[in-house]
Length: 167
Image (cartoon, rainbow, N blue to C red; front, side, top):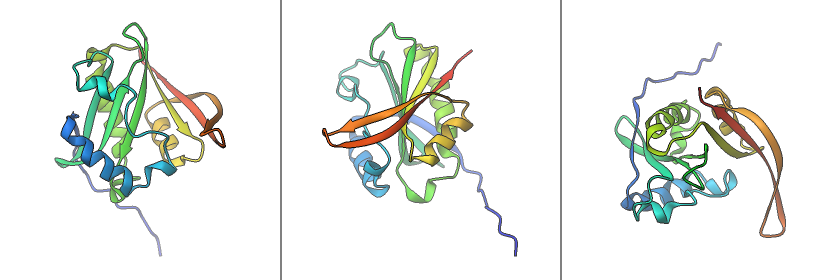
C-alpha cells in the first residue's frame, strides 16, 4: 500500500499582534509544550511594543483560513541594526508540519521590511528542533554558527544560528 501525505491548501495570512493576544499566546505555548522546543515565546521587546516602540519590533498573529494559530515576530536590538531576529510559534498541534511556518515567515519578512528596515534575518534554534530547522532552510536560511546555551546555570542546550541575507 502506498501512503501519501495529503496537503490541504490553506490560506495563511498575518495580522498585527495586539495586547489581548497574549492570552492566546500562552494557550498556544502550552498546547505544543513550547518549553521543549524554544527558550522564549515572547519577543525581548514585547513590553515596549505595546508602548509604541514599534520601530524595533514587527509582531504578528499567524492566521490559517482566518483562524489564529500562532505568532511570528522580527525584532532588532537597536534602530541602526541591519540584522533582525526572527521568532515563530505555531501553537496548534494539528497545524505543525504543514508548511504554515514557511509561509508565515515569508509574509512577515515582506511585510516588516519597510517597518523596521533590515538587511538580514537571523534565527536561533535548538539543534534538536528538526522541524524548525527544516522550515528555516526551506525559507533560504543558512547555518552560520553553532554553540551551547547554558540555562539556569545547569542545563546546556545545543543551538544553531541560521541567517537569511536579503538582496
